[in-house]
Image (cartoon, rainbow, N blue to C red; front, side, top):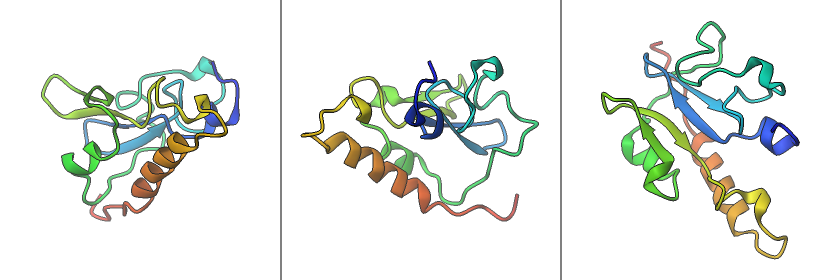
Length: 124
């Protein structure tokens, strides 16, 4: 349910489409900022007509593996290409952490810092 700023506007993960372009999606699997499940579709497969996918330089398997806390947070298409990379799960959701334990927030923001350094691939 889209109930707060974090779930609506902060990345839950990133999805790759068939062209190798990426989009960030919120907790309801919709582009960041979408706040009604009326528009819910599948990241990587839908929303293709909207300018929310971008090609980035140097996205490698190693880079993506550094964004996850456990292997299940990377999901693949049947051909082996990465479909989704989840930045957290229910156990590592930073909004579920007590104020005395900021570890999950730090880990989440470290992931966002890594993503923020990606540069657009100008060839596309």
